[in-house]
Length: 363
Image 1 (cartoon, rainbow, N blue to C red):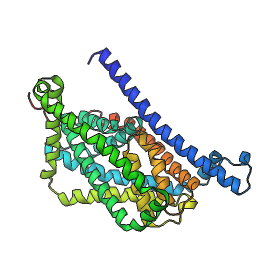
Image 2 (image 1 turned 120 degrees about the horizontal axis):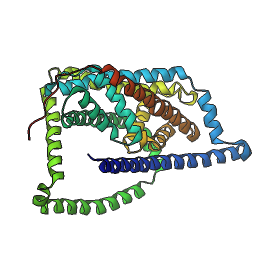
Image 3 (image 1 turned 90 degrees about the vertical axis):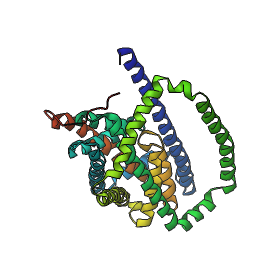
Image 4 (image 1 turned 45 degrees about the vertical axis):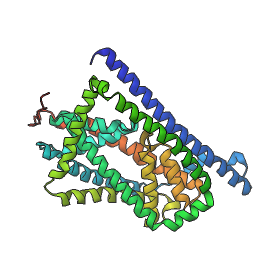
């Protein structure tokens, strides 16, 4: 790759980062503005003058009153969950013929979280690329195992979401009836389907019509090679020596994620009395908020966590404060700290390390 191409790629990545950051910041700003308006109205009802009523002052006071010992436990739960993630990932890589170091798997996971703060999904690429370089494994094969890792995450969050919906169906229904117009949502869904289905069919038809011309392009060849590497990574699931251990690690990853929400509840007085089931619902909503593309879930996480907490009688300003405490303590500070440590340790720990690696396939 020449200098011009590198500059173009850097400029494109910068534009993507700014785009996603602006989306996340805009959503966060809108959530803040909505909550600030409600906060001022509440102050007016209580007879408190507007110049003595500031949501920013309340947030600052709430942060000062946080019980940080609980947040330290949240961080430990996060680290323990990544112990299982690293162990599970190694189990996916080993059938490829490699015996990677656990420390490389563990630290590159934090590297992935760190880069996801810069650009959504960039973390998976950074994680796979760094791990592949240190372990001398073709990057497309490592990417295949990362895809499998994410597929299991997607299945896990769908199962957990279903469990939460079953357990709290009545709570969700009561909240929806009070706050959501079902008819409006159905109309919006109809419009989306009527517009999306024809567009999807047209795109598939164009791809099929020009399939021979596309097959001759360098881009198609590159995509085919990547898909082949992905498929090899996915095939590793069928070659696991101890599938039961893989399952146990998968359970622990999400059990620790759930524990992080419940522990974080205790760090903030207004949420400290909420039940474990409420923690499950907030965990699910927050999880989907992080999945939606924005840096670390900025804005989307706040909106969905605040919405989930409202189902259990937590006022909007307190819900917004809790979302900020959880977001900025772990998603931002925690991931930046651990990601920076990984950036420092990886080259030091791999100095003089010469793994056997895997030779790339010819052709």
